[in-house]
Image (cartoon, rainbow, N blue to C red; front, side, top):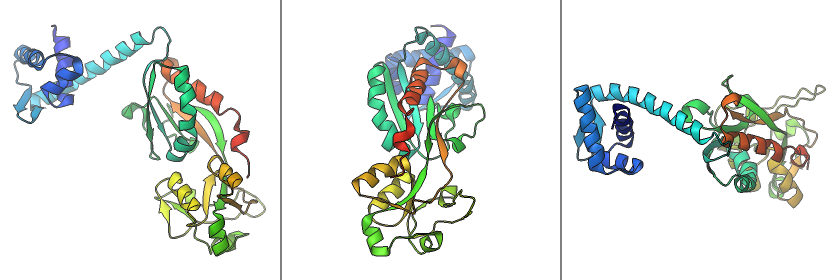
Length: 303
């Protein structure tokens, strides 16, 4: 085996933390992997690994050498992926990130048809409301609010507009009354999103009123989905996207509160890397999502 192959094996051993785990991941025997590491150490004239019963760890020289091997391994993976994608057929693992509420209520229901259209694609979905770095976290695409796009180099395509409404369960309103203006709303238990978030500023965009309102109450959740569940449970009044609230308005599980309230809307977008080098699996997802959410009227009913 030439030195480049040995360097790839060494990088795998460091990342896996043991020779046996590395051997399983590349389909070789532990003795074969150990032999190649020994030959590599002979070539560079340094011991690269500390070997213990618990596994292996790089020596100081090994750690520095690993950084070079890792860079080479990444280039190799890029070249390998390019060759696999030459036929243009979407295939391989597709890593997607999405905001929690949108992912649960909209994205997951959209995935079965996508996966049926692209049988060689395996979807890995991470639901999170934190900021996503596509490159460092190796996501192929992220679905988020337009204002969450921090990297100017990322490409975005609009999926739909997200309008927000105030709502509460019938049980809560029967118990606490129905507010008709912001002064009355201030007396209610308003459900908040945890952390420093402008999503708790329930402001109106109507120029005639210019109302500004900071939601306060005894409950906060770490995602819009948690706030949604709390509203259904009758804890208080929530501000939710129409795509979550509309069906509950129809079923009677939620009631539209202050329907004249007109908060700022935002766009939901799919964010991905350089359009010119987009892998077929990612392009297939982006095009499919745009088609799926093209008819936004069903999501923008006022209830």
